[in-house]
Image 1 (cartoon, rainbow, N blue to C red):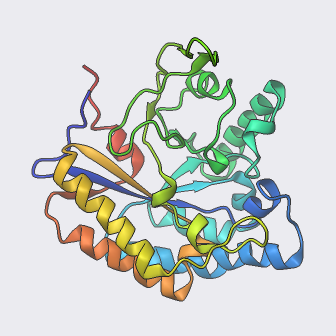
Image 2: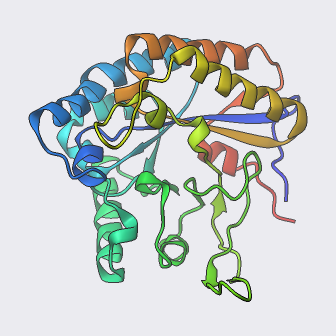
Length: 281
């Protein structure tokens, strides 16, 4: 079941910007002090314009995974993303910790998310990225029920899209049992291709402070491997405006884009554009 990339292209590359703003601190970390919220504000007020400038200079259409809380809190910055032609994917309501939700609350928040997309974007999202990249046992069925084309939260592959199978039975002695593959297509992610863990300092939780050149080398190494060895694959880079928008980080993102762009066979695209060249066998 391959991707049929445009003629002359061998690897799709997606820039996925998780525009979390206040929501990541409120939802994933349960932190609401002025200091933490100001870091989310930096992402909206400074990081988003810097990312948009880089994407515009290189004529790249990205996928912005955006909690609806961000759409409501920073409408001007969010509208700038939409007006620039970038894709908007679902990323929860307030960056909620999905594994902690009971089934009724997970369904309710999914319904709120879709309603708010209609309000702020005007269309339903085609794709979903779970806050903090985690599911409950119900999440795959919800994504299929609500008609999502794709998800980008799981790590069962690195450079090849796939239909994930839920683990329906956990058995430590006799092995686990899989259910039927989901209808939605999974675009795999990786913490190695995410800027938040290595760069964002959270006292007692996340050390941050990874030198940006080391991170850039890691990103380039993964691209080079995929380009050489994973024909018709996809590399999903995940960045956050409050992280990648810092001065020394945004220059590294541009250097990564320039490295990728120097390869004629690389194709920058939104995740829905990549989904549209998938062929089921």
